[in-house]
Length: 256
Image 1 (cartoon, rainbow, N blue to C red):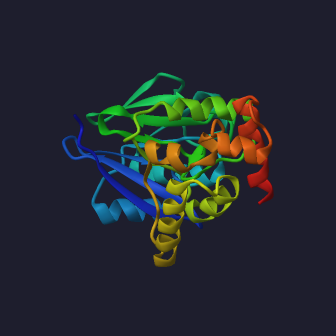
Image 2: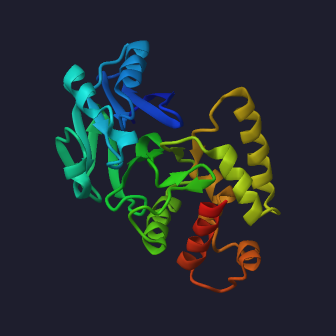
């Protein structure tokens, strides 16, 4: 089993960068490249040499550093085939079920469209980690910018079936604000109340509430809980299609 070292760091205004490092081979990957200068500084801090960028989607706040970082490090840029034309410097195009090697670590590509039409997540089963970009946030999910509710719900279901202990790393830290919204949807959820208190305390300290886990999200994240009788009742949508209920929750969050 690969024993990855993981370094999470804030970047841009509210992004979170993540480096994964295989000490056995010295391979190092960055999940996206939001900002070249901050990514290179993080590599310098750790003393790691970048070998890969694993791109989740084409948005500028996830790819802005690609060109400079590739020129400075010679790294290989991997990203979703469906968005290859919009990802600077892409070398390898991936799709559902493809496997990427980062040293001894193996990442399986899961297509998770909805936020963008070609968004992918990277799942490392041996290390019990998934990198979900802007598809899923802690107690939240990405906006439906290039997809509809049915598409995003199908993507979220792919993540929901991962083992509950899987650590979840996302592209932004919105947990505290997400909890405030979630409590308007399911205020009786005891696990959510605990998570909200924890996130508020961490926010005061300027510390991230990430990573989360799949299990924690299943218990607290309203976007993963449209089957909850309490949520269905509060929305007046008892017995409706889960994708439709999810879509209503997303609309309410957009107005929140």
